[in-house]
Length: 182
Ligand code: HQG
Image (cartoon, rainbow, N blue to C red; front, top):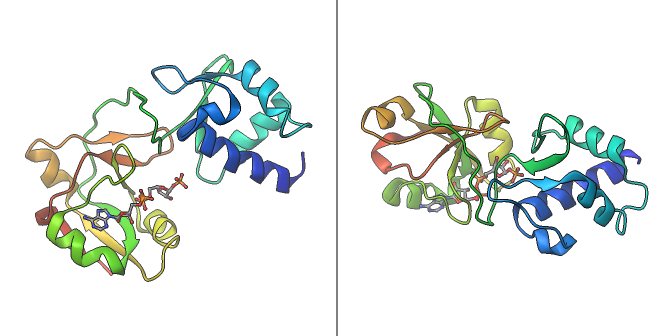
């Protein structure tokens, strides 16, 4: 597969493994995993040249490390961002003092009055550094970054989870823990 096909494969699998496995006539188990051999069989109808090597290359080169294999490489799943119900079994962790949320200036007024909601996702997504938050924000017009007092939230009982690709997840961030950064 060439780089263009690699990118198309990554986009398509992001969609299928997070939002609509039926599109490829596959199923996800309770933890979001699907069988690699069956996935490859079904993928070949759309990507005739896809094979294990191409899939491994896509997982390794994905800019945001969106996918993981199990240790035997017989199963694959998306690391986060699902809209279908899956339990990713992430263990609650103590967050850093501060986390960042990239968003649009257009949403800040609502966020500062209602808090950060998970919207269509399973969690609110937070970044551990400004650079990553800027990438997330860059998907929207009038990008901006909010600073989240994560340690303070943790102190009062909010749970935080860290994904395989180092995205921090939490249920909700109340306004009192949000500072408008820049
Ligand atoms: C906003 C991509 C108004 C929130 C990215 C965000 C990330 C509110 C949007 C990952 C609000 C939801 C997650 C409120 C939250 N009022 N707006 N009360 N509360 N919002 O896409 O964090 O490509 O669901 O600020 O790179 O932007 O999918 O979440 O702007 O890592 O792998 O509502 O998705 O990664 O948008 O992005 P999203 P997100 P992937």
